[in-house]
Length: 97
Image (tube, rainbow, N blue to C red; front, side):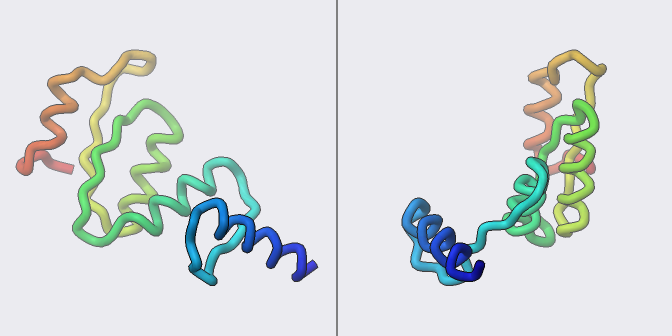
């Protein structure tokens, strides 16, 4: 079993061109990958602009807040695209979470 995990980790290191020995293969749902990325990418005081378009965007907001990020949540009517003016507003330093 451990030999298989080490072989998999070795192939992942080759594929991602890294020598990091902490390379792991983790089993989980599709969204667990998004959670892993956000949890490892975001730090306290980082800002994330999130479009609130349903359940999964709400999960992204929650994970980001747990990581300490300041979240600017842009909302729209369900099924409608985000307005470009609102997206631009999200990049302004005075935008509120």
